[in-house]
Length: 361
Ligand SMILES: *Cc1c(COP(=O)(O)O)cnc(C)c1O
Ligand code: SF4
Image (tube, rainbow, N blue to C red; front, side, top):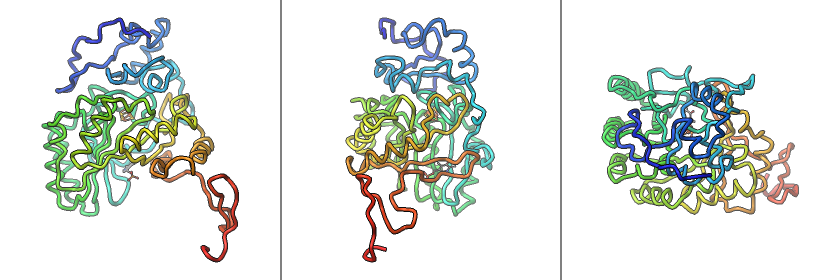
């Protein structure tokens, strides 16, 4: 690893307004920082033709070696050119569930609103990797108004989930306008926002950004983090600033080969969340997006990892292990089962089967 190169890159004209720190995006910058091998250049150009790259300073400073749990998440790899037969461009079927631009509606009581497709970094395993990117997907005012109309006409929808892309890559002014429009819809009881910004670009969590999130509705944030080291001092300060505004923060992670697929790594991640007052919500089974097979961890391994934590790690740290069933059939829990096949016994946290009597059956 070398950091002798100057960190201040030429300002990328595609950078959204308010982006203070310029991420690494180009193959030559990655080579100059020792993150990729020069001889991989031509293959990386092929990767770059399909998938966006951005390594923000907050993540760059955490990378110790390119194949460590931070580097693997964000550094493009020739392995992404290997597309397995079962991998799909739209692994969880979002495209078929979009009634108007920016809305995804699969469950009766909630809908996603994706105001943009820009992220602070581009995860190499992202299930929307064919869509996200720095030029991408900013909804026009007309599109936004159509999305608000769609939500307004559907009183069954109680919760809107702001996602993308990453909604905290919007300018505070634009985010404020979206929050105002949502808060004006009486049946929206809950507004949820999914983001990687507190970890990946903590300097975006300014008081203007926090002001933009104020609402009289129940407002919840879910942050995406996959390794304990993402909880840097700056990230923890950003999370504190969010929590001081009275916003509960949950964590979501993807189970990833080489990143968090060992008991110590997963335990470290979940404990880092609890310590940062972030309640682990979902541990996602990897969606089969193109070129992500090298991150795949089989479900039986994921279940064994969680079993190894049961009883040893605080219950606060326990996430629901979920699979988004390929083809758009929805998310279901796939964690370890403790109840026996006949329903009259359970395994205890040490794996010993205990017969249940009439007192609980
Ligand atoms: C994941 C997802 C949600 C949120 O699901 P929760 O289980 O409530 O977190 C909502 N809508 C769609 C389309 C989703 O994919
Ligand atoms: S932050 Fe989310 S949407 Fe953006 S690249 Fe990562 S997984 Fe995909």
